Amino acid sequence: MKVLIISFLVSIFSSTLSAQTHRDTLVSEIVYNSPKDIASYNKIKENIKNLEELEEKPNPEILNSKLRYFFEQNDFDYFKEKLTLLTRYYGYNVSYLSGKENYYESIMYGNLADCFKEMYIKNHSEWLSENLDKQNTIFELNTLADKDQIVNGISADIYRSLKLNEEQQAIINHILDKHSFNNAQTLLDISSNNVID
Image (tube, rainbow, N blue to C red; front, side, top):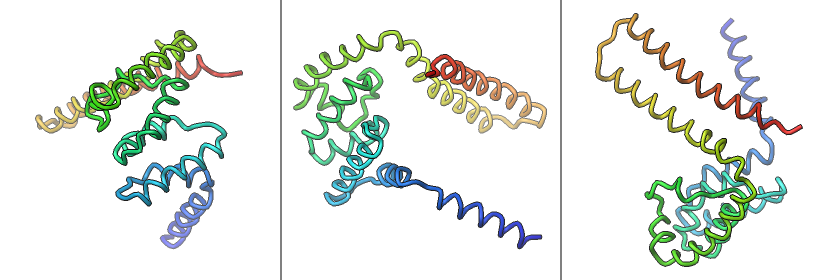
């Protein structure tokens, strides 16, 4: 029986690996590449270009997640180009920054502040004029992750701080499940309301 189960698991794992598309491979290579040298940095840029050609559009999540590397490599022209694209076409919003980003000081107060301010005011305003009706939905989506983090943080504190019996743990788990369900329901409602026919 063990041999049968192991064979089954190996076949599932193998088929999962072989089902990965070229796009999936590119995304994975970009996401997991944290460049330490110019060669690996250039590989990210090459893969981003290939992904854009494959998808026939920029991938805003990928670009946003790699902004810090564009800045870190002092590739300011590329950094500004991608930041402009994110602002104009995907609503990059400076108010969502934590202030801990490696480029934050530079775009807000430093050597890139003047060009960032001019670019941001122009491009974010244009994006906003085309997407004003979506602001409540965007706010709801952006707060879901925060709500999850708060609930998870509180539950971790409770479990670390208290010695709970099984009944108490069950009650807390029920409350946490309710909050998780509410978040899932919000996401489901948003996606149901935004289905493209």
